[in-house]
Amino acid sequence: MKLGTRRVHSGRVLDLDIDTVRFPDGSVGELEMIRHSGASAVVPVLSGAAADPEILLIRQFRHAADGPIWEVPAGRLDPGETPEACARRELVEEAGFQAGRLDRLTTIFTTPGFTDERIHLFVAHDLIATQHHREADEFIETHRMPLARALAMIRSGDVTDAKTVVSLLFFSQFGLQV
Image (cartoon, rainbow, N blue to C red; front, side, top):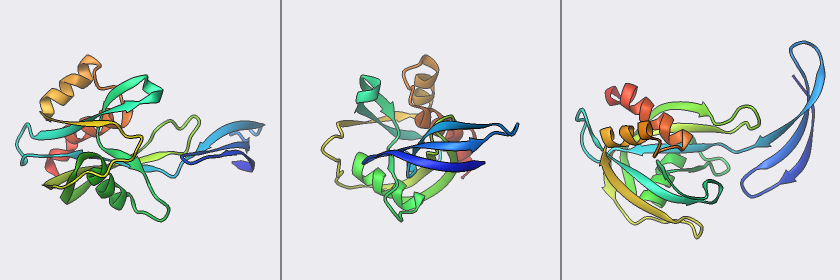
């Protein structure tokens, strides 16, 4: 149970708080907590509902990863924005596609040991190509591939981004029926 909180930093992407909490055993302590508005991520399906659909992954430069990594399109929720609206917006901004249909897969905590960030995972169908609207700090290449190849890239360790791993594995196990 949270007894109090003290804001240490307010930033563009996240805030850092020191929370005073009562633990399950009754003791009291302090925890550093990163507060995040949440995000949405989306698996873009380019072909129909075949057993091995063609999907789109992006290869994006990430400073924290020391270079480019494989990802599904994703981004932070704007104030007042719904997770679905965020997924639709990020699909256009990063990949240059509008979703005719967007289905919810699940919602995950990214790292509950120190952040309250949740990412809402979706799958997009009936895509319509449009112009992307990337931000100045987004360096992205788009890549079409069969789902089986993306899954093999997870197994080989080429795909290491957690939201992408979960999105693709969840979609491959449960999303084809959506």
